[in-house]
Amino acid sequence: THAFFKALLFMGSGSIIHGVEHGMHHTHEKLDPQDMFNMGGLAKRMPITFRTFLIGGLSLAGFPFVTAGFWSKDEILADAFAHGHWWVFVTLLLSAFLTAFYTMRQISLTFLGEPRTESAKHAHESTWTMTFPLVVLSVFAIFAGFVGVHQDFPVLGKMLGKNPFEHFVIYSLPNHGSGFVFTWTPVMLSVVVGLSGLFLGWLVYGRNSLKVGQQDPLIKWFGPLYKLLSNKYYIDELYDLVFVRPAKWLSETVSFR
Image 1 (cartoon, rainbow, N blue to C red):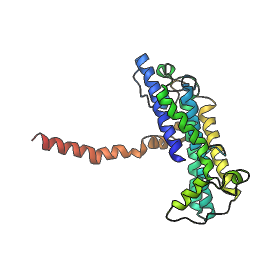
Image 2 (image 1 turned 90 degrees about the horizontal axis):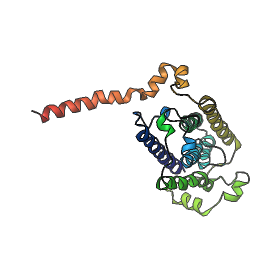
Image 3 (image 1 turned 30 degrees about the vertical axis):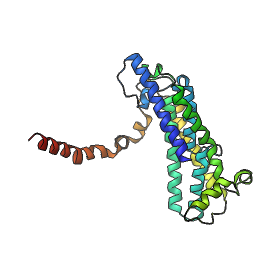
Image 4 (image 1 turned 135 degrees about the vertical axis):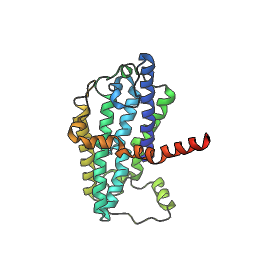
């Protein structure tokens, strides 16, 4: 299921960038079309991209019971819980919360509120050759997860818990265990962390959408840590210093002598 909604999000991102670049050509603005802070208000201008991206984002965040991402995430959490891998279980819960938070952050910054640039204001929906694959993937991002519902899950387990595809996948693996007993604890914790992350993301970015020139609220909260994280721990700069510059110097020295 991860492949479906991640492909949907990547292709949806391409559609968004394409729409903003159209606005750039119209307004002749010079800006980064991949920066979410240059967007805003795209839900009205790119409705198909918005709806499909929302489905992919909610699936990535594990929105409970109706997205494929919830069922795949629930299986991982349930397995860690059943086998007593507590540090793994807690780490997975924390990761699920952060994933839900940043998912709502990107949805809010990109699609909600008013456009923060003229290019975003003049963005338009992508052509059907770009939106049709998004619609197809969004169907799988919702329904593909029902294939792996645990057979002891109330109601849905009896309907979907045993199916030919699941049987085929399990017995095509070189090693497969006997499974685990269903319990509500990982399910409810999965629901709580997913919804909590989405709600917090909406509180910070969606309820009062950012205006033109307004800073990311996280800058105030985290200060220098925000700069460190936004610069990806300066790994790119370190890589450039240690590998790229010496390689350029060596190639230029050898080539021109």
